[in-house]
Length: 613
Image (cartoon, rainbow, N blue to C red; front, side):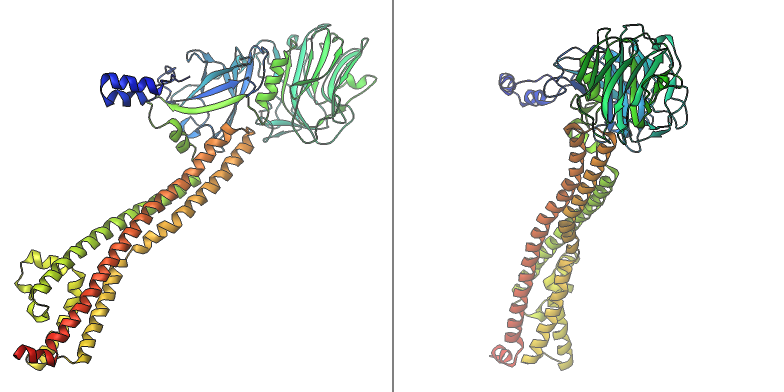
């Protein structure tokens, strides 16, 4: 866990040292623990929680192979090798590597299932392990057989290619002699086996699979049946007149020992059709117990007979149980993660398996990713790494809109500012000249001052009127006398010029309105699509908990944040530029009114008479 420093201690330390620097340094988070190996750039904390808030397992389970479900909501596939070769699992001490192997790893779909050996499974507490990744040069290090202890005699993931015999994952190599009817990709854990009622998977007799009289034994599997059957066998094995059958009778799990000391143990009610159910059976020489979804549902006194014949999974092997007094049917449905053990597994382990392997697990909690350098991660880093491709496309478009709006705001603010300053200069010159249009001669000004005045929108309006007056002066051969109609013509020319100046002021402002109105909607689109993809990935992986949902949802919301980040500055800039543009327009209108009034005074017949006096 990360060491914490109280706020009061930080303030006292800063006060004693008399410097703000110490205060800032104290607020910087420190690494949780030393890095296992510097060749790995990233790591993720994975917490195994058996407290009441998590799996609620208060008994010791011993050594447990724990299923780790990775998906795009809790893991960055882009930072790992394409086949997951660089994955490493390390114990809580951040020193001891843990055996693991990958069942599935699909970076394209963003889904992976990994089995990790946890030697000391916690009881009523929480214990962390570390997942390291991000080493493109890492060699393969998976240890499939080492993931399971020596008491596992057979483990089938059914991750083989369709039509090939199933391979055992333990060191004993108890491979099946034939393949199941089919392989389903969307099983409870990666791939699963489909049984069509045509017969079982058979496993040859082997010393590791032999069970002595009154010996210990454990069977476990995930099962989903299509329709209720009478005495459908999930596991069947017989030696002579003795046999052991584990199956479903009209959907009700049962265990049956046939022979000189028959035993039958059945669940009190059937399991749901079309839903995955975890079924386990243990025998310790004194009692046979039946478990459904990790909980004991029935127990019967009795012991197993000596068994060392061919094993059938999904039905009875030929010429064994089928020849007994009460035959069984071949199973129709799906099975996944079939395991046989040479000991009676503890209740805590069976519950841990059911919780960790099920679709809704609170037993395994995924923490945030950390980067070795310490930067670019934390909460915001996790959000950024969880953003989907479609959201990046939307954010990219919003980035272009943001850049465009900032360019518009900068150029428009510069333009309006230069126009406003030039207008003030020209109005000052106009009033010094007494408002006489023919008294202003720009040719007599210095070039720099003339260029500044020509940037004035009021000057351009004035210039349109001055040209008309000069034309009339040239026509009359002297100072023109302007009638009321002529003055209205000059006003119309100035109004037309003012309209063009207003169009200049409003040019490109539409791009800001697009950013203001379109940015949030584009961001919302990215969020909705990101949420859809997050839920689809979670449904595919089967891991439904807040730690699986939160990163994807928060990453999807990043698109909405980006949309607002585009719209809010554009809104402020638009309002600012609009007010300044209105001020420039008002100044132009005032000048037109003042100029026309002075024109009437100076160039009308009455104006000449007063000038003569």
